[in-house]
Image (cartoon, rainbow, N blue to C red):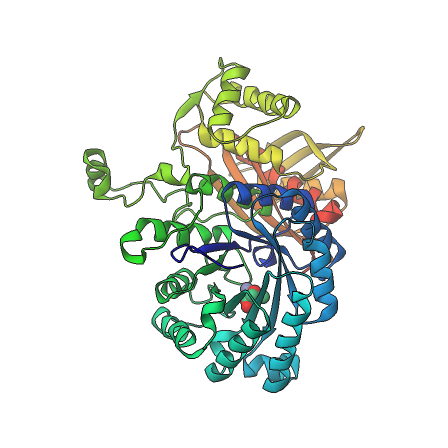
Length: 512
Ligand code: KIV
Ligand code: ZN
């Protein structure tokens, strides 16, 4: 689709496709729709919802997102193969604004070792695939996979040919995250100078982060004249991930003086989107992550704190509120009523049906009994726990652990499975290990703990701990889980159970 505003950068979000290829990320269809709706609320221009030919589950998810998510263009990925394009169209056609995204590698490394094709064959395949897709819709994107390591004269030839064949967008991916900003900018300027019909399409980039340069390369490309950037929330994606949407958008906004372009992103939705994606994928955000990390707006050094108190701009280049971060405002306590809770949730951007509010209200009361002051972050943790959408096969009923320097750590766990209550005990290397072994005894699954992370959700000694785990079952299925509680052993048990429930919920499991 033509970009009529020459200074607008089209934000193409691929969290649900490339982001979902992150090791350990597993989203079921309901979770994908939830993220799709939030991306629409944040006003991304294009949502790449998945790779429809990949599996019936992927097809269904793309189709449902096309049916249910209004606003952005809904795009599906496809190899340059007719049956892929058919599947892609059959999934995206339900959107008011469908897009077919075709990719084919153009580098000699990929052509020789992966596709076993000559350059001439690849060129012909690219052109015929774009022409085939154009039979279905005029919004066709072509990606020259591994463009950075391709012979550049050949790449120009491909770009020219696919535009002639009808591609409205041509994407130049740094598939393996190999490029350096200055080099990437020159590469794009060459495309603008050497491809005669380049003005007939939107030129896009898609940068991977293998050298930690994906955002820098994307911004160099914007400065060189590209008008679409492909990116993901929290920088999720294959291997080291993709360029992070929030970093690109805020860099463009904060340094408007330099770039002189804009996006349509509702930046106040960024923090919420980041938290939602982290909770639903189970992939935590590192505390020092730019824009959305827990420390992104925290000032530790006294000299910095003093400066910020005197004048924010001494050490802050962005207002935390511009990304929707509310800070640790003291909001509610034990005596706050349901109405106050509802109002506070609304002001944080969450709206709920009455029955869902009941569940949140119950959890709020339990927390308020344990914790004097409840912060916004505590509420967000409860809400995200509730919306994580995993069907709970097992529910935690009771936990008791014993540990100490002179004691063998033991855990007694009681779980509910439907009407059944099952209890087991185990010892372990520590209380968490004992807890996980006791849970394994009940479920019969022998899970391997791959990663365990814990953070304090808000400040103070009575802060809730949020635990995120990554586990694998005996067949190598990898899933993540999250749990929060004022008791970190209970949070650990909840996170593990959340992951186990994902393993037992077929739609949520992803084989690697
Ligand atoms: O990294 C890549 O090249 C891709 C393409 C499919 C755009 O993800
Ligand atoms: Zn990619």
